[in-house]
Length: 292
Ligand SMILES: C[S@@+](CC[C@H](N)C(=O)[O-])C[C@H]1O[C@@H](n2cnc3c(N)ncnc32)[C@H](O)[C@@H]1O
Image (cartoon, rainbow, N blue to C red; front, side, top):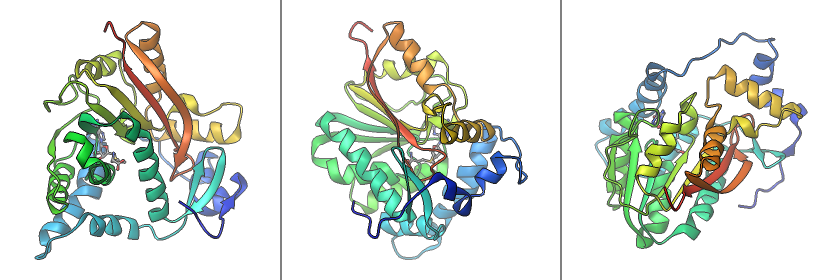
């Protein structure tokens, strides 16, 4: 996506766009967060997807995916300080979202056709419904697992508006089994900014994902271990993830599983893109080892 005029910037400009440098340096108050189930429910059920779902239900006329996206993007009108690889760039929320969707689309495309495309922690389907529209003809079934009831309801409603057949159900990335959705073998499974809500994963997470016998699992997630301790931005990212209690061991547990011969890591691409430069997502793609 071509962004004109160029809005490249430097790390030194970050405080003009984000309250976080001051917070991380102890110059503005901020409390250490703990990502409990209650906290996830507060953020997504009560403050994010719940009110949007209520707004949809209050409307007498049908509401489309693009309307819901515009409601969510309008709430943040200012330019976001984003990161693209090692560069920083100012983007509107809509521009950043489009770059993000196209990045995921390009990554998933080579793995298709497939019996199913599955997102775990899909929210209302911002990414999954976009991919479903693009890949409907090459994917047998589309599954969205989500933690919140309002996210699931919105996803089902919006899929119907888009004339897409989807299956939706509960999913908890931090719980044994992850989801009761009946995922076909050889599915393409991915996550996008959902695993990082589980502060500490255990090896069970990898075992549970392997039990679905996926063709590939792609994590588009912020990775603590990919934040370079030899750089200022890397240190700030680490502190940001600590203070917000985001996941700190996704790379570690996947690399340990690879070392134990249980999975094969296909690619790791650190810090690809972040709508928030302090929380960029990496890509880690892996598959169960042949003898697993
Ligand atoms: C930042 S949103 C991302 C939504 C979607 N994946 C996307 O990229 O647009 C995070 C989502 O993860 C969900 N989530 C948080 N903790 C989760 C968990 N333990 N298991 C599954 N989903 C979870 C939230 O309810 C929310 O819908």
